[in-house]
Length: 134
Image 1 (cartoon, rainbow, N blue to C red):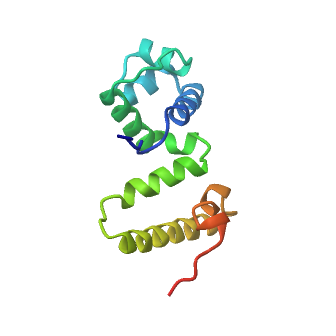
Image 2 (cartoon, rainbow, N blue to C red):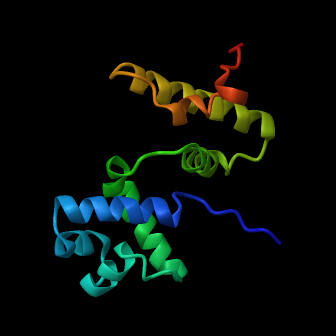
Image 3 (cartoon, rainbow, N blue to C red):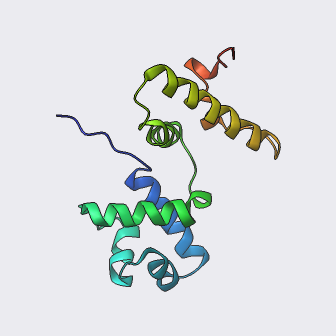
């Protein structure tokens, strides 16, 4: 049975953690995450590779609170996030409509502040083509 990963990947979180440590300090970031300083040091250095479910949950929670602005977004992470947000809707048509509305709302928010990132364009259907809204 294949399990799908929901939320940002470990490399994305690791990159955000490295940037957070560079901007703040190892101790401050470890406290934000609820992790030991020595563990976080190993994690950002790439030494911690096998992560328990509780650790992943804590890292993802930190990322959602603190790390989103620190990591470059990519299409895979964005797709996972949208799938996570819409995954509880059982009807495929309803889920697809909600997904389209979420992507449209996110795009409008970014467009009001400047250029729309490529990862948003990648969510707009096949090849970045906008689906016609009915």
